[in-house]
Image 1 (cartoon, rainbow, N blue to C red):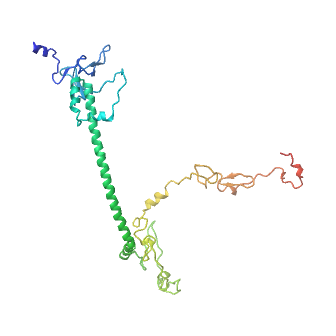
Image 2: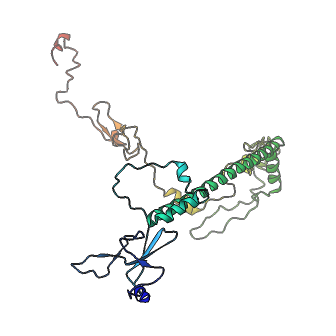
Image 3: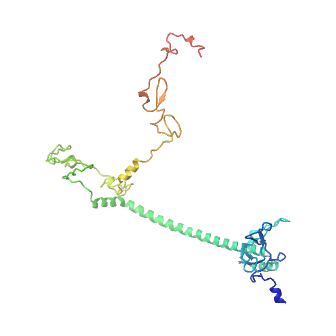
Length: 346
């Protein structure tokens, strides 16, 4: 008889499932959507068999043996309250921590209550308290690491400042630049260079005249045989570099100047710079307008006539002619008019 009672329902999937009886304390309202609901029937049905897992935080249900399983999270269902809620303090919330001394008593009370919803909420609360503790520990470790890194950064900054002061005292930039200029060969143009051969569409240099090197005149000493650049009586130019304060080379030879020395622009880059869109100013000084959409040279009110007060674009006054008066007389500045003739004329 007991075996017949246990196998009364042939669709019972067995353990860990148990019947989802609404009168039981372990009942959970888990509804399953039907694949082909009837037009007159409901679209969802209550799961016949369920079981709880993951410390009671999830519920899994099905309709019988061989049917698909469906799961959902378990939470307390907050019905309309009949009395005011009692607020929990932070100390009371921390009592639910797994490491608290009251954990055993709380677990025994939950076991006697046998309410899966409340057990699931307590489990959620304990997991949250554990995560909060872990995050606080990570934050404290990060703050401690930040303090250590700040101290290390301060020490390194002091070392760098000391190196900088020592290099400034011995004028390290000047010494490095002078050594670079002394040991770097400079490209010098030769005197007797051959002219380039003419080619179609290419550069053509003027040929060197015969005997030109012997008939050169120096503009400095007015002697022949050399030019002013190589004159022996030429005054020596005082060298000074504004980048490293050296007096042994010029600024264009310094390796510490404020732009890239070794970079050479190509023809394509120069053409790209030329083809860039022209900048349109936000203010026109002629028409006194904000965001005019034109430059000052293209302003339609660039020039004005001082007689008729008519304004026009650039070059307007070259072709402008004032409109002459019909009478040809100036009634306002009439020399024969009396002062009392103007009274009441307005």
